Image 1 (tube, rainbow, N blue to C red):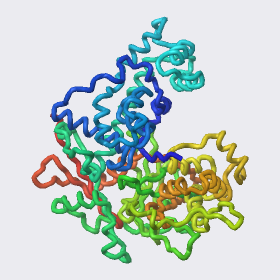
Image 2: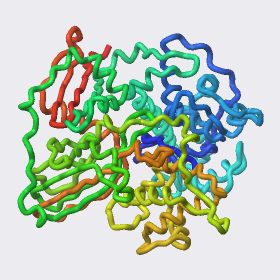
Image 3: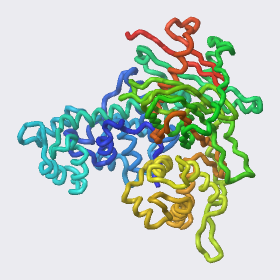
Length: 587
């Protein structure tokens, strides 16, 4: 299975169909009016060179885990070029990836980008207009099929049908190519913007030495209207030793210490009062969902988010807590002291319309809680952890310490070891989000996206139903074991794919859960039954909620000697969050 663990994909949901077209190596390479082997661009002035280099870095880290990773296949070369806004044809890929090529590094990638121009909207429009025989702004299926199957790198009829079904935005049997070109170019721009934002948000990545060049921010970045960064610090419980506090991420720790003389903590009186469990809570309507915090390769923390709907205004009691997995009582969970929080935002029509409603500030018996009244309507539930007690593990020397996953029985047949079966049972418990003992297609796909970057469609799910144990069209625990057993036997016992899945779920090669923290959210409502559904992660929405939780409580203090830099600080019972806002006038 190919692993793709990027959480800011190529396109936003409003242009998902276009993103699918961009993900294919053949996507409209026939439309290019300029030969792919055109002369490289001339040398750039220094400022422009800095901007170009930063875009190279952002594109590379959107595909690879590290600046030290090499491009090891033609498919990877295609993906990273697409992430940089290029649209490589097979001829272009073959030019840079020959039969003698085994790998390309970051410097090689930069040189390729200098030689390959971005596809411009005007260029696409000129190519489409040549196919528009009626000059009415539309292209029929037959005209598009003739062009795609007879020119350039020819496509099959099935591929043409797939392209047209995605490009026919209005579903009227005609391609509005002006709208299509706009969306295509917009998707590329969104992809690059997301990659740049990811890079800018991670100070550790920005300090890395990429290839033969060193990073220095482009001068133009000083003229941004307003930028913010959030620094997190989780307070240690009395039961945690001082040396355990060093598990904070290096990037957050270094930024925090550099501002220690300028940040004034609020007094303890600002802390939220203890929230008591409502009397008669067992009589309230109850719904719950499970989830998991994961440490990503860049040190960030990710998790699913959730949709909550209330049919009427009601008193609500919310809790979130780390989830203990019960299958290995001899190994106490190491993640039970991980700090958690839950932000509640109103579900507006757009992200900008969403507003922070409340968040958990108190802790009671291991649970982080909030109690109050919520109006009828829909809400986003956004789990959060500072990640200070979730440490990214070194991947070195795993081969010397790996636990056995597969073995041969006395009869010579392959089987999963008992250690692996215990871990798979834990994973099943984590991805069984509604706790009904079965995996729906939606639940299983959250696992697939996490471990392989791909979804299982309904046809493939039907095949699973024919081969693995299912009940009510949902995969049982036994069926989940059978599916992983098939993965092992297909590779003649090679555990490589199994290790990919286990590492993606936070396990090291001793089968210890070290880069993840399972959690459970409980929603109690006095007057109505709450409805909860899992959603994919939206980091922008979570950052919006986190920033609002800080700025809405306390005033800003200017950083000494910097009139345009302001610091907001929130100090709760269990974490300290500082937000630094750079409000520089646009030049």
